[in-house]
Length: 173
Image 1: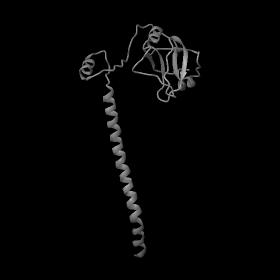
Image 2: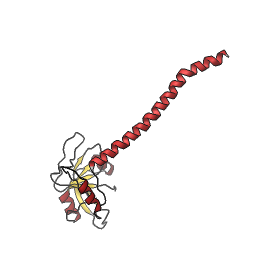
Image 3: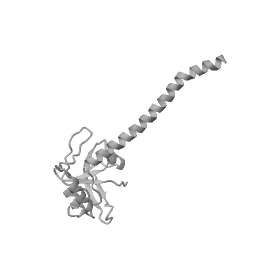
Image 4: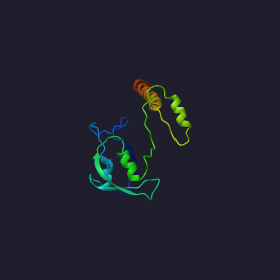
């Protein structure tokens, strides 16, 4: 069986991204193997200790095998994790990055502007901007939902109040 998955490479002591299982316990990545989500392992029929083949999407000729060191249950997300150094070694790359997480103290506008000017960087995302956009979208959606709920409640209220009156008027005439 085959499945396209994102393998996230993390440093040994990641400070900005922590892997938690379904019981909110922190997961420590093993030094060389891959950690799979339970949902993917079940779908592919993989168990701890099995060897899986990794085929990068960029360079198809570089298939590699890796041992499944852990299978963890998570409620959000699907994919796999490996230690960054082990993933780089497995793929024969010298610590290539396709995402970088930064925690900055102070204003980020200058750095954000500078990073957006670099052609090799495809996207720059500021957490606060993402949260603001999410809250704005949810707020707009809730406003629209509340409008329609209020409209339908009004229509039902009018029907409950005036239909019996209309019925009596129709019977008397």
